Length: 440
Image (cartoon, rainbow, N blue to C red; front, side, top):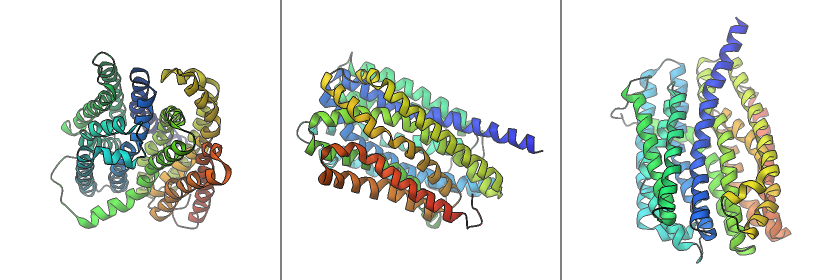
């Protein structure tokens, strides 16, 4: 019996994490491909402009994930209990909330693109191009929101393979359209934004087949609006939203400090590192998000052994991936950077900065998995506290403060210092939670 259960756990582990990692890496590939085509087809300044637009893009994703992960956390637990109606209520209310938020963001990006660009830190060199990217990205805010919603719920509804296939197809579409719009059609930075949006639409269409074919327990339908349920969705999704805020907050603060202390070239160099690190983050997010349904359903069934197995497996996989990614970038980064732009000064700056910035991966990998475990088992307060410290308080405070105290060079170390401090907090929260009935 134990051998059979162990085999089932391992099968579930592979079934959910591999498609999730593939899907998340392809999601982040959108950003990387934009960077490659913009950097080589438009220029260094355009590369920096896309980096400056990233806080808006990532902020959009973070808000969408608030509804997505709040909804899927509730759905996974209810499906574990056999409550299909309750799971559908959570799905439909989460989708309605995401639609409303995306409509607000779309309006802001279309009506006030220059103001939004200025808020991200864009100066005279980058302002116009950053505003262009934000404007054309905003056109597609609604499909972007439904990509997040459908990925999470289709995965929880038993079709992780379809999620992976949809995101891969969308990424391939994005690559082709980036090439078409940036090079032959010479559409510049707006072409990259439009290519990303069309790629997202293709993902939505593919994922919709899950519901058309009625493959799982979830169904499209008119939501039975429930303010208490919406409040619960927001509460459960808050830790993941805060987690997703880590990237835009770090990017904004880094760009702000670099523009004022090191100049435009450092902003462009940071953008290259951001593209490479964002792709790496796809692995860490993929593992933690892929295991979320398994942990949530195990919690719903009150199976502590399964929860412990999936959590510890996630920690091991993420830590191994973090070490592998850091080693690869240290060894091969100098050969990868020219994909974005071959300017020698840009490459020199990026090569020198990566070892100082990239070690943060090791603690990001662990922090994401611990946060995912906490919110998947209804320890929302601990998860929210961890993610607030990690993604808002620590990184912003350290990036803005330490360069004033120790000089501009330390800015590259700040992300790693913040993640290490967050890991200490995560370990303490996890240790305290062992005293509760659903401890590790």
